[in-house]
Length: 130
Image 1 (cartoon, rainbow, N blue to C red):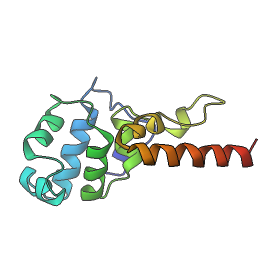
Image 2 (cartoon, one colour):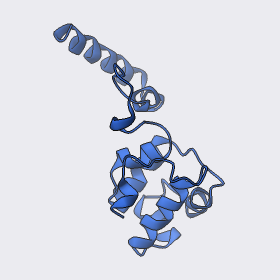
Image 3 (cartoon, rainbow, N blue to C red):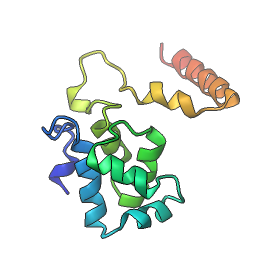
């Protein structure tokens, strides 16, 4: 899967199912069934949902789902986030662009207290690096 991890190719050239094909290959390489992945993710990713991902019926899974799959497949989380279109490869970022979209989407999974702490920490970091 070395060339599958290439940050330069996030679309796979197949118009939208690059993520699905990538996930199917990763599962196949690990010799896991759909049900085995469901068990390995603790039920976070059902076998039916994974099947829909692999066939392209679902093309934008949540970052949480991608994280669970990255852990099971031993694939970098960033690779799955890129293939799902949440972030762009570092090499493709425009000059002056500070981060991909991952930070924007991460806020959806935070509690109110976590969000407050994160904003306080960000304020602190920014005060140290004007």
